[in-house]
Length: 271
Image 1: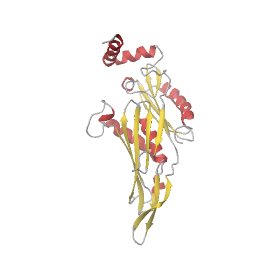
Image 2: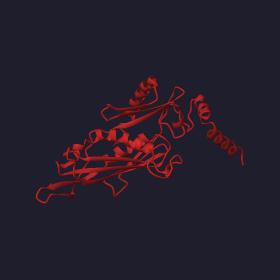
Image 3: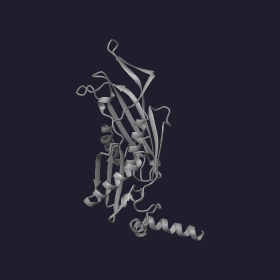
């Protein structure tokens, strides 16, 4: 074994046995384990339309975290107490193949919590009333299924971008309800893009020993004292803030940093 290989092995063992001390030593040098400066973000790439069998799709990478998303549209009857409201069903899957952190089996609690948070944001992006075809008779159901195929932290930000990008890429056939036959027909000749009322972007942060980490990795996440996510729409309005931890000063700092990051991303993500 060469000297460099021996040093790498010792570092990997030390990282596993003493993760907090390992991170503290990097922070003392004003750098993070993945080579970023303390306040730096990872690169983001967005590709859309790669799944031909879906009504809309996207593939998003934030650093090494990769999420693929497909939108499938189906017809359904609305609920009796909401005759003009369609359905939006987002779901995030964190399979065992994306990281050793996740085990085979039913959806993890983390995936279910993230799916609920994503639903809270997306319901403001696509009003259910916009999915109505004929009141009381026919509405659209949009299944927005996102799967993480490589996990390196910050699944929420990545999944939200993937879902919004896939919805923005979604094309629906013209649907008409016939009151004589009581059936809904779709015309493949007349297609129209899905209309989104807003384009939200989430910026997540972690607080470690009073240092603010934008876009934390999977190694950093378990060591954080506080986690904060700020969601801002394309009009610059904060539409959601979530915080785990009680650092009030950090919330103000992260909100300001999120606005600055949003200005940079807003012209580059949902094109």
